[in-house]
Amino acid sequence: MTLVRAGMLTAASDCVFATGLAILFFNSTFMRLWQGVAAVPLGPEALDGGVWTMLFGLGLHVCVAFWWSGVFLFGAMRLEVVRRFLLSRHGMLKVAALYGPLIWLVMSLLVIPLFTKRPPSFALRWWVQFICHVPFVALPITWTARNAAARWYSSGSGKAH
Image (cartoon, rainbow, N blue to C red):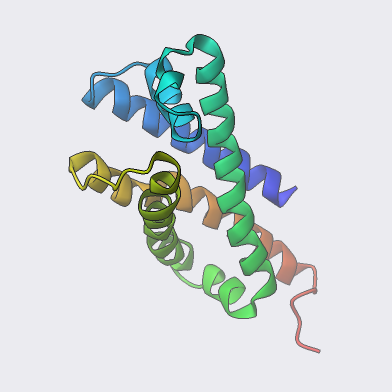
């Protein structure tokens, strides 16, 4: 249930952010944004694919949100130091401040170029994504993990044996 919560919360938060950013600041549309996401694995023809490639892009977005949520939760739930750090004062924010940029670095420097065969462009949009992956991607993940860690310790499962 924790993974479902983290994945859906992250997907929704990042979807709202990305859509608002695209429409308000980059003169794009909802459909074009999510077709652009689909174009990463499908190629540039996805931009002319209509509703189906838009839905594919949204589905891919949700899968990626679940992937990064799962990666973090797998580590957080198994590493005592991470669980304890999440429960410390501002720990959730500190971890998000590291995990969000890490996600964007991996996606923009490795994953996306692997599919598109193009290097990243370090323009304003790249830096906005780098910074905004903290509140809109990593924070929903760390918030969910923090709540799960708190339940873990309150149930007695986190006691040292």
